[in-house]
Length: 162
Image 1 (cartoon, rainbow, N blue to C red):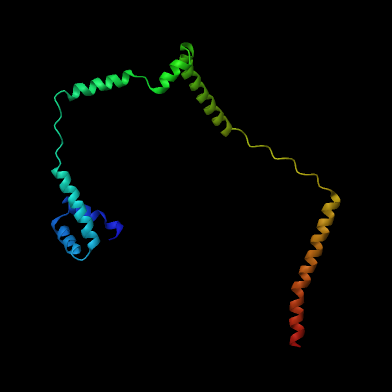
Image 2 (cartoon, rainbow, N blue to C red; image 1 turned 60 degrees about the horizontal axis):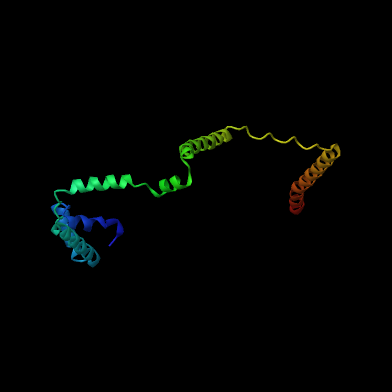
């Protein structure tokens, strides 16, 4: 069975296929054991879900639920208990403000860092006149070699034809 068509056996077991598609899939089930196994497993799941009945809700369910919610809200979380023990009352009022100030400071530094100008390029190195002359002489020599190389094949070809 192909994984891209795995929703077809599920839809078949759920009864979501129209009559023509269901008939075509039933013909396929006769020749494909993998699809047949998946369809049977899905059918068993749907039948079990249809047979299951939820237990009735007791009459005082809402009252018990709301009482439990109030009890849970009244109990402090672990970090609230830690703060009560570790931090005196005046500092407890300052901690959220300090945390907010730190976050704003970090955000400001991040924004400022994006808007800083790129670093200036360093000044070019001082070039010696002798180095420039030597480099130009070397380039001129290379051009002469290049001209000699391009001219020599033509001359050699001309001498071969004679």
